[in-house]
Image (cartoon, rainbow, N blue to C red; front, side):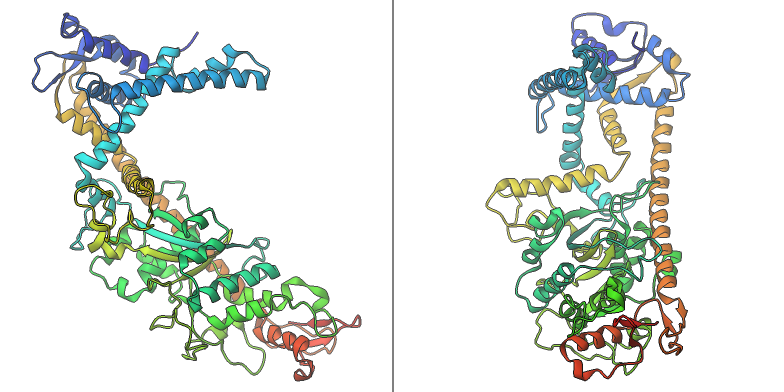
Length: 608
């Protein structure tokens, strides 16, 4: 026997009561203790009866149940009785729901054959998953689910579009805060290119990673293509190993939406860009709205203190060498380095020093640091700001010497567990004065649409109207989903369109529902804040561990000569890679450096 449900089955009865209200006294039933009267009408419609109220008033989720059902009746009344028309009307929704039920029946039949069960067993499982009693209840479930979705879209896109958008963005055009009862989404529009590279084991991943010859060449080729301006970022993104490659690397609207379990994107990707845009970009950090934006992104003073003081600058020459050294595994006589240890291949020495970084870096048109002997790779980074230009003829470097895309956006690099990302911020939170245009949902052919406007809808030019519509829908979807208590907005709106009366045992229920809504909003705000805080804590602690692993200093004894090495880090000095490359291509230029010695087997041995 199925358990009793305060579900769609009961609401079906409420809807029936509405239909009868004009020709019977059903709405005068003394058991109705919560009623509503539509504006312009004198008929009261039952929302809750005494029996239903008593059944749930003592349960732990009673208030939420009453709230859910009142919202449901108000929405269904708009469609069934008032003829509400959004993107679909009631008749269209009813036809759609009928097809959904049909598909579920087909699924039950298919599952029965695949699972070796009966149709009835699988059908009951489907009904149970939707918390309904029978086929009629399932159809009503789909009807209401679609009605709610249609009305939510209308509410976001029509009724309160401007107000919702302001809360979604978090910053008004004048730089002031628009934050109210929920955490603003702080949207960014991001593009990226990914080259997949697996991480080393957990205890070696920060200093002993490896890339294949193919990966090394691909990383170099992507950056070379961008630096020479041979292709746009969008065209170059076709080389990306991410599903966004066919969309020019576009990953859409990225928001700060989080919960107590964190965000959906990897920290290096999202938080790395937040750090670059808010801390390492001096212009943005000095913006009048910086404190508002940083608060919305969870960037507290503790986070700032935990992040590296400066963004890492990687010389363009390092990419050139990564490609040049990609296939070097032995000298001119086919003698291996350290018995063929892949971690000591020249390309991997370059990879670990410059690119195996989980904090963001920028690519500078500069040569690598000079050296005359072995030096700590970490120390060599400090010498990079010598303004020694690698190639002044390369067109895609800005006044700071940083690699940019064709629009002037700085290309930011970062390593995550998936590989190395090259990212650009197409629309930053610091462009808030342009948000009204950038996140406008007007479409070609609609009044007020500007085909030349710089906007998310216009971002990808197309001959297909559906492409513009899909991007406008992306904006609406993001605005609808940034507030996990979005339903309460719709509830308060619909409640304002009628007169609701709580009487007898239900007196005070309206206030309790309002208190419940407020508590849920506060709880979701708390979870959002906690989710952001946890992500930043995890990210900054990982960066601290990375620095500790890469900075650990030690000396070792040469097993062949007995000499002690210089004081070095776990990162192999770049000179080792350079000299071994010469042993292959210019063997006469290397006079047996003390840190590269033959073993008895004839292999080179790096003793540090």
